Image (cartoon, rainbow, N blue to C red):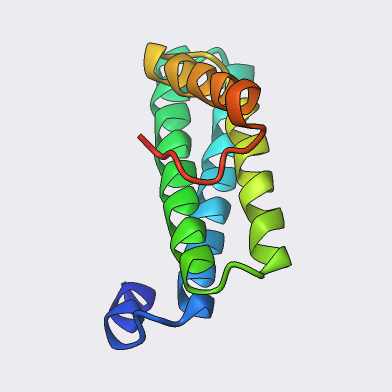
Length: 121
């Protein structure tokens, strides 16, 4: 919440947006760790719920990284973090149709454009 308040104060700060993106990326990674734990324990329902949470965190991360790049398009670190986020999305187990749909959309986007910087539907 602190970072979101900071965005209200400094909406044109690419660093604030990038930091928010990084926080969401980390939250997604934590959820993915818990997905693997749930799957190892045979709890597919918890794994599905956590996978969906991870996807949500990663989508939010993409949105924040894109906002940061809108403010300052020359940030190599932010572009790398965005690529890491997309790679993490592709590693989410296909435990729900919405995960499969988003991963498919990404593959199609890459085939068409060679880039996945904007869409976050």
